[in-house]
Image (tube, rainbow, N blue to C red):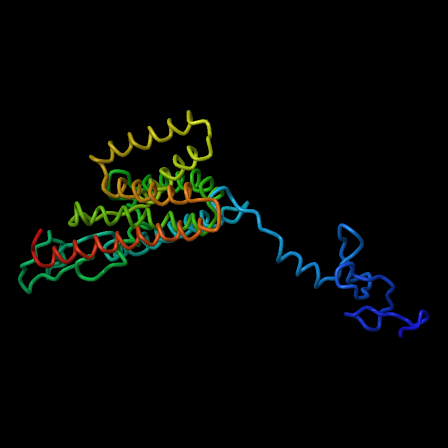
Length: 306
């Protein structure tokens, strides 16, 4: 039995005398190991163990709360780095732009796709197994000296990503936001492949249209004032119509539709233990659908069925 006059020491620092016990594990703790608790003090280990049992705050759509839109910053950085690579080496665009099917001649010129071609031409694009183009094209933009917009293309897209991306990321959380962005970009590329496989396209517009759809769906789900939201969507749809004559409307529409589907799953999944599995299932299901559609289209192009 312990004597009342015995010297008690901290369980973590045996050489430090202590007369205070942790209110949770009842072990002696020194001032350096004391942590304020609702009643008395707790030791470092008990505080850590208690933190594990505390339910982490979540956004309305199940994501972890974050105040810094890190993913948006990273996406903007990747787009800018890709643009700098284009300026340093123009061949980057030809190598990584979204192109469903095309031919390259021995003279280095690009030609429209024909399933039956002579040995003087060789395929290029997704039809030649370059599947990465479905995503890499979404990180490239028109060079300064080409296209309708030139450098304004990346400036406009990055400005839109900066403004709307931060809002959507804060609401969804980083993982869901990144899933939305990439699936929207992929949805835009797949629709380009299905409708206009011989058109070379670049730009983050498909992904940004997906974020626009997310902004609208989330606002409705949260019961926000729809006045400003409706005006934003009206502008987005007007631009979709204008883009039919200037840029790839297929990419814009594909991103809009994919973004709407993904965000609907995020917004309307039950708020219980089923929420995360349902959200993940919809994302995986959409990814599977897009891959299957792309594979079927490529198969048809190779066989000359289209």
